Amino acid sequence: MPNFEEVNGIQYNSGIKVVIYGQEGVGKSTLAAAFPGAVFIDCEGSTTRMNVRRLQKPTSWQMLCDEVEFVRQKHAEKGYQTLIFDTFDWAERLALDDICATHKINGIEGLNYGKGWEYEKEMIGRFLDATERLITEGVNVVFLCHAIARKTTAPEVMEEYDHWELKLGSKTTNKIAPLLKEWSDMTLFLAFRTNIIATDDKGKKHKATSTERVMYTTKSAWWDAKNRFGLPEILPIDFGAIKHLFAPVRPAQQMIAQAQAQDIPTEPEPSPSDFVSQEELVASVMPPSQKAPQLLPDIPQKLADLMHEYNVLPHQIEHVSADVWHYFAQGQPMSTYPADYHDYLTANWTAVLDAVKTNCSDYVPF
Image (cartoon, rainbow, N blue to C red; front, side, top):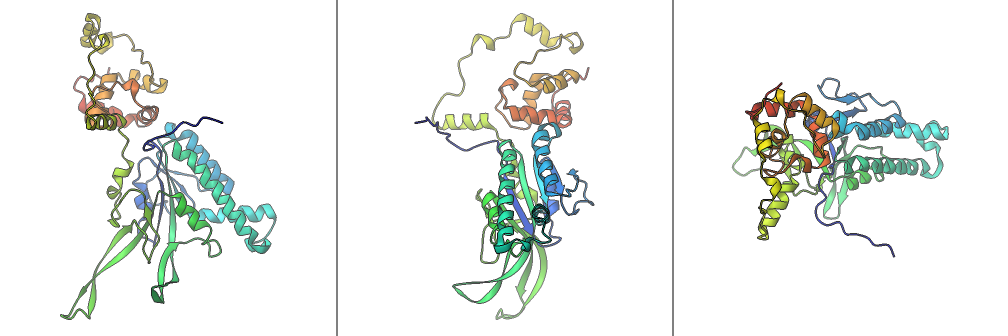
């Protein structure tokens, strides 16, 4: 019998799977553009008036899949942290066109007994599986969708009422929409909410006073929504309301806090390596121009090259990471940072260099 090792605790450093849907003009693309390191695959051209990073508009299902693979391979180099599909109901058209072309039919209904819709369900399922490779590498994946109100009933309600749901093909609503909702960590419904007040003493007459844009995070009788993060049921349409979910993980601080809670010492006895030799002390006060190029073990070559080119020292990166951005514990060596954080520093070098210049008084640019 094979031996399986347990994987305990929260799985950090993986991306978040998000579905955002809502009424036209409510701000889906604007909200998504605020996600960290956002890059769009704009299937319908809705971001042409926005200053965002985007890939070419896909003209086929294969091109869409190729762009996903491109992001997976280049996300560290390009600084992509969030891949956004705008919108998925337009991407669905590419899937249907591909099925029709493969089976040489004019429309999806050309396949008898609903086989076309089953083929689409399988195709979308494989596509969602492919996005999991992005998720495991720390890239967030966001699907934007339009919303549609459909008439529905409930056992406790006698009359029909409107229920907002993902606007996917009417023949596939019971197949594709559940796939996306099950796949997601968070499904947010964005809507315009009208505030109403009573205009008489008995509360029988009312009038609308204002309209605000909100996002709903939990399911109700009137809309589909969910989240796995304990969010309030209603939030303003502002990335700041969910920004904390996408903050970089601080594993060292979490380990220290957990150890302290269990009364485990977190300050080890000093070792010989903690003491500075006379040669190191002299070297630390030498002008940078007189120092020999530093060897940076356990640091990716691209990052080491940038540090040497711009004369940035390890302790300056450590100061910014620990004392300014609070990602790691004070004194944690840069060489022990996770590989994905090294990639983050490389991809966002301009911001790193600005932070060093602003916060490190000993920085000398030559």
